[in-house]
Amino acid sequence: MDKFVINGGNKLYGEISVSGAKNAAVSIIPAAVLADEPCVIENLPKIKDVSVILAILESMGAKVTRINGDDSKVEIDPRGITSHKVTCEKLVGDMRASYYLLGALLGKFGKAVVPLPGGCSFCERPIDLHLKAFETLGASVNILPSKIELDSEKLEGKPIYFDVVSVGATMNAMLAAVKVPGKTVIDRAAKEPHVVDLANFLNSMGANIKGAGTDVIKIRGVERLHSCTYSIIPDQIEAGTYMAAVAATGGNVLIKDVIPEHLDSITTKLRDTGTIVEEYDESVRVIRENELKSCNVKTMPHPGFPTDMQPQFVALLATANGRSRVMECVWESRFSYIPQLRKMGADIVDNGNVAHIYGKNRLKGTKVRALDLRAGAAMVIAGLAADGLTEISDIKYIERGYEKIIEKLTSIGADIRRVTYKENVEDDDI
Ligand code: EPZ
Image 1: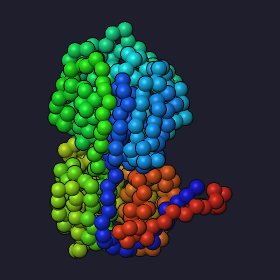
Image 2 (image 1 turned 180 degrees about the horizontal axis):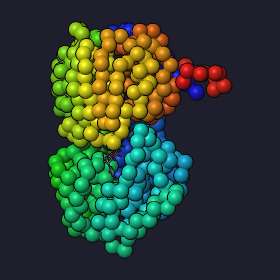
Image 3 (image 1 turned 60 degrees about the horizontal axis):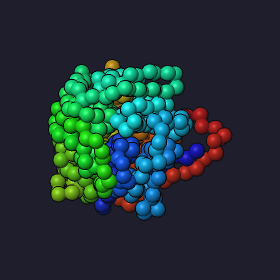
Image 4 (image 1 turned 45 degrees about the vertical axis):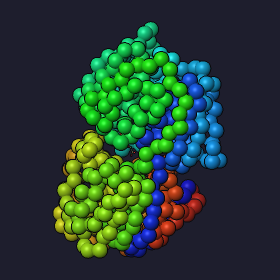
């Protein structure tokens, strides 16, 4: 079992590069199953979720060639996938996004059997909208205790309306519909950058998808999808996490390989705290010299402020001057990590989906847990800004979404390291 140990208080200076987007990669890799030829995917982040989804495809019969010798650039040849059944329960149970195999296999074979997905569980994460979209296209859905079965005699393009904006359901509907005869119209579609990236990837393979990035996505089914080479967009949330880290510690860092427009809502809120954000073509410079000011944040689907930046911002605002209010409007509850921040001296009162943060200048290092990926990122930010040593356990959650986080933060002056400890060591504080 490993931990991150952070000796807080260092300001951050220098340059850092952002990796490919996790939430795009975990949908684009399953999408490659739909092609009749091999596809090359570049700029994949080297993180656990990517290696797991690649391993799932390999277990299904796909040939994955690691062009650079690692997961950053792969050729996926799906021609060896001859069954609609995914049997590797353990791997599928390791990640949430394995649900994209439902849409991809339904689109390829007209049926699918996939074990129930696992992954970060900061609250109940239903997939009823995904299943409703499959049913609308003509599939029958059978939910068993350990797996989901989809079947169909004939799928047909149809209008799909979502009463809740859902990233996963939008992407799964696209995957299922892309080869289905006729016209599918997804109304109240999610507009996140990774939704657009998946549509761009599918279009590079010959799909006919229009409107991704707007509320209405129109898909004309095509008979076959061909090979392509595609580069994943930069990770909006990884970039935002490092932006928040610099704001929390103070300093001056150029964050490279980003799409600044994807960061607009984060940039706006950082500027509200008095942090300077300069935008360039493919980078942003974050400068924080003065005391942080409080601000209010409300999470919303894109182009609103991303829920996946909410915990990192709560950690940041815990060090700001004055009272901030953060409202979580995407997930029913995503504040379970707040007691961990309180252990570090943060003064936060949460009630339902609202957190009131009474900012303090300094947090104090202590032992905390990474309860999930973004909650873990929040602990890293708090630890970097705190006085003294912060020990973060359960770092597996952090490492499933952030490539080389230790190396990247160390390169800009953070004192953070990974230490191995024996599991039987008494750890009564955690
Ligand atoms: C994606 O999850 C991301 N995961 C999440 O990021 C992110 O928090 C979320 O989108 C919102 O941006 C991946 O892309 C792999 P949703 P997803 O369907 O697609 C409700 C991270 O840290 N809903 O957009 O599962 C749901 O309860 C992860 O990187 C239904 O009611 O989220 C929520 O309130 C965590 N029924 C809202 O929609 C459904 O069938 C948005 O969820 C599906 C969702």
